[in-house]
Length: 117
Image (tube, one colour):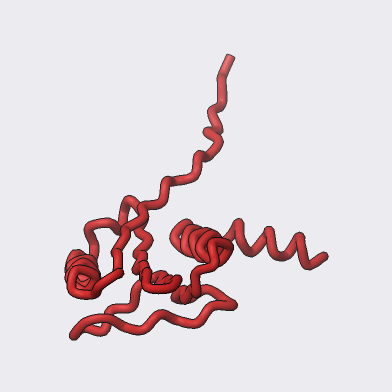
């Protein structure tokens, strides 16, 4: 199997959250941000934040601008409210820091219906 085929295969089998984190990290890198992404090969991990030491999915810096990004799926959105509060509080107290929550959209799946005659 060629490397390109293997790469496409790996991307298509990973979770929607991981796929979105990878996509956002690449976009930010193309915009000349220094990007750290949790659990994504080729990127270092962001530093933990707060007393609970929660780690955001992405931390991107460019000059004096810093973005903290947490990616959620529709199902996981309400699961860890304390983590979102921690990141929100942290960004509010740091000059030039913004916190963003990105919610993935579920992929459309082909519906397989059978028709009986």
